[in-house]
Image 1 (tube, rainbow, N blue to C red):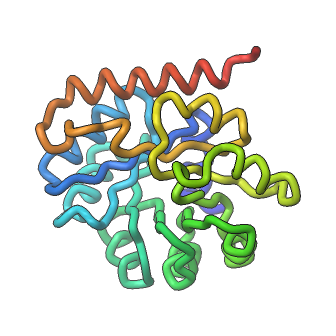
Image 2 (cartoon, rainbow, N blue to C red; image 1 turned 45 degrees about the vertical axis):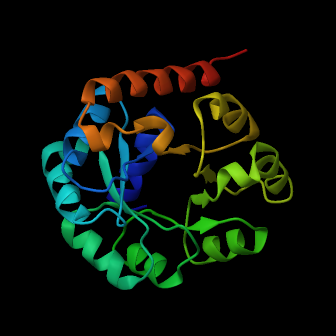
Length: 217
């Protein structure tokens, strides 16, 4: 396991959350990442759909150093992967199974979360070297789907992403999710307004929900 893979595994072991910071502008993204890091979220994804987002990836990676795994999302091909890595990303996330992006990330020792929604896609991703898989779109599939998928394939480590709400934390973790990818339900409009105080309050609520779900019955 590479240093970046080990760092990502350690981040999720500490708190099984990947924060997804998508906005119309990168203006507040690095500041938001710093707030989330202060609250204990150690894996943060910046989707490439935000215009100019690579500057925020670089700034966040520089500010946060090794304390947080800063990643890029919506990585669709080897070119996206290369640009993200050059900007300082240590994690690549895709909305689908994108073999060229996955291979490029793995060749550079990065953890890569390819998007899957079927057993066939999941097994293909694992064969290409993925250790964790992004189950997408999570809100359309649901915790019961994840639980059913891992009955015949118990080695799959799935991270539901897409519409995961605060009330869903317990059901997803109980179903066997390895971690949760949380986007708009975490940050709402704070990435547009720059209301970092509201983001901090939301982060604390999500972390508390995860800790409650992890607590022994």
